[in-house]
Image 1 (cartoon, rainbow, N blue to C red):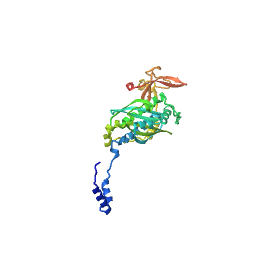
Image 2 (cartoon, helix red, strand yellow):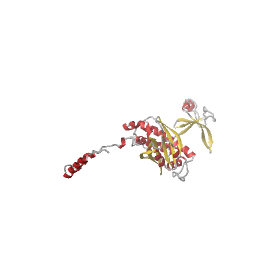
Image 3 (cartoon, rainbow, N blue to C red):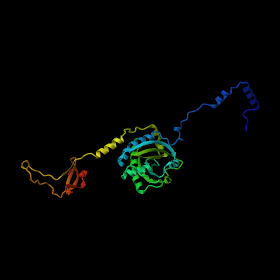
Image 4 (spheres, rainbow, N blue to C red):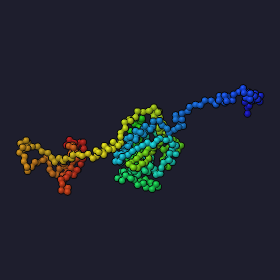
Length: 328
């Protein structure tokens, strides 16, 4: 190895240090240099953290809260827990068991994404849709979801994708389509295990039952629109109070409506009208076997046939009047 200092130079250096002609502290401080700032959040190594992506989920929560409340006919509250980057393999290991997963495509972006729901949320939805008491009975943890349960959850996932499309619209026009439903995380291969995914966890409360919904989008899927996210987009921040919307829907269903049945029509003169008395018979333009016009609030909506039920006059609805029939 090549020598940096000769023997004579080393002896001279030690002599200067011993006699105080060299300040060791000053020399060491000069060699240490100055610290530099390094922003970890703007480097490619910090994958999974997408700026402003949570704004999309805020918009989704406002829309889906109303959609789910109307679907289940129960008050639904949705709270954002937070975003977190994962390696895809680690994310699959973090999912509960059993889990209901919906794999979907985000066109025109590449790759697919995933929506996962735990068993508490799934059984709460089942209880609401199938007319339960509001307190779902959770089966044993080892039981997988049935084909009927997956079929119902497929409709719930499609509702979520429609609202997610609306949330993405200000940033990127997308078409989200469900690929398949899945229960086994081992059968899900969105990306290789070492690739990163961007996750967002939501807590959904249906009356007294809480459950979890998690979105997982591969980093490679949203990377092409990263600049759009960093620059910021003017999102529609007009919030709709879900409680107000739910109460309004409930009140509207209880509104009183006037229903009338038109037996028929005829034309008479003023003289005939003045000569009418009790017991006179007015001939209408329809016989007793023809369909009658049923009006709601003075507007014709149905056709029906007259009859008697339990000693009362009644009308049996035979068809709904379409727009083409409104002129009749």
